[in-house]
Image: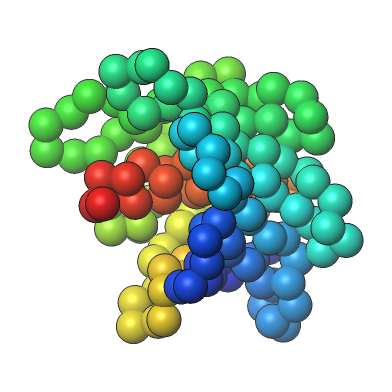
Length: 157
């Protein structure tokens, strides 16, 4: 499954639309206005919340908890490194490899391909191409992308 993640440039709540290959909006990620810590809701095409990503405060390194259909699934944690950004996913055996700062990375589980994320350059606002191997991993893969993008966005501001 190939999806395209495009952030709105002028949005108070950090809104992103996720499109399929035909240009149909299949998911929307919407931040909360004036919240303490980042909180992003993932809605399906019927505007039903299917995922929630919440920044955990009072941690040395950035940490985001992921909830899918209201149930806690995992934490995405930025690890302390000097030259390269590394993340771990606590609660799942998923592994993230690649150049995260350039938004060009892969997610695997036990050597099996889960998803890949590639930043599309020369676009208005941030835009990513996402290739997901299995449809059941879609919301979790989107949550990983959202959490990593929030960490990168915070470090650039």
